[in-house]
Image 1 (tube, rainbow, N blue to C red):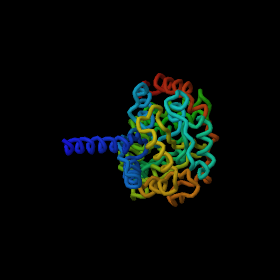
Image 2 (tube, rainbow, N blue to C red):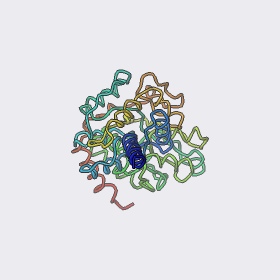
Image 3 (cartoon, rainbow, N blue to C red):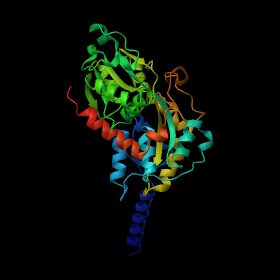
Image 4 (cartoon, helix red, strand yellow):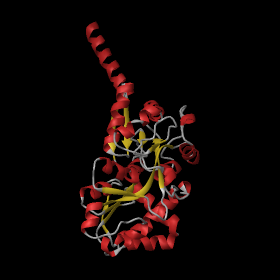
Length: 337
């Protein structure tokens, strides 16, 4: 009887240990980087991670849908705008990490603007890449500006993600409006629509498509295009001449997280220089938020790019995001070619 009780007790203890040693992570960067973070955190802490990779817009929709019974614990990566919206809607929770003093000012500002509900983990500028072989074969001049993407010779040769699912594409939407004003910005997006061959789900997909020769131009974050260049694809990275927006990739703890202590452990760990080095190792060339993390030499140099004064608070607000996405659906996406 005693042996049976001991067996039952050890079984219960093992079950309790398993419950303590879990983390459900929603990841919104490239799959390779998601996997590298998962493996390294498991190795460093012994905590078992269940990871799901989706674009930031899709992850926001999932977190919102699960609000009454949260399944995720931590949301790591992806553009800051949907993280800001989640913060505003009370879907994520306040947390002050002891690592905050190690972070760049822009990462801390993101945390302050969201009332401590999301923090910056990397930054990267928006731009596009074009396939040099296709451009040459089809006698398309070198595109250098947003305006160049409207040229008739690029009809069905531009690819960009859908801003409803992709934070990259929402950054484009907000960028164009901030550069041109809302009316002219939407006129631009309607004209661009005629040249778009596909609105993808993932923001990085257009960079891959340009690298593979499936489209001449892929609008994406410049670091995603750099990944293709490093892999020897015939692609050139462009920082548009009119100026461009940028992202502050973010991290948030999901309100009601069932593995809260492990979510906090991951949050603190993910802000360390060692954890942030994994990006470059996974061929993701963003600028890290920890001041002590070496910036990958391949990363686009933000100081050399004409960056706009991107209004993260406005374009990350719930009301503005909903309004602009609805307007884009009604006025751009459903237009005939």
